[in-house]
Image (cartoon, rainbow, N blue to C red):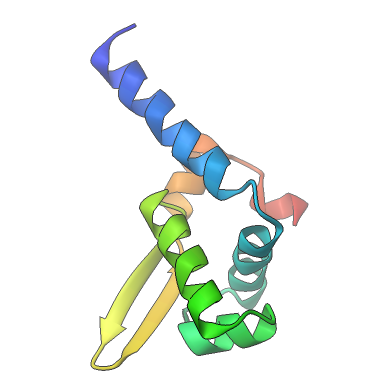
Length: 96
């Protein structure tokens, strides 16, 4: 196995670990259905998750490359990282 394949496999492991939780799947579903950037509070509220719990899940999804987070002063906005889904999980979002 070459370095490129190994790196891609490591990314796949991170992705599948991140998606192995119902709350994180719900976060991805919420972002996908809204089709636009949302702030962390909006997502946490829609997913009925406490602020600290939501923050943990957002970090896990970001580290797996499934969401992008943008900071604007005190607010954090997130959206789906479409490139990651297209490369590693084509068609997945349509199943939500």
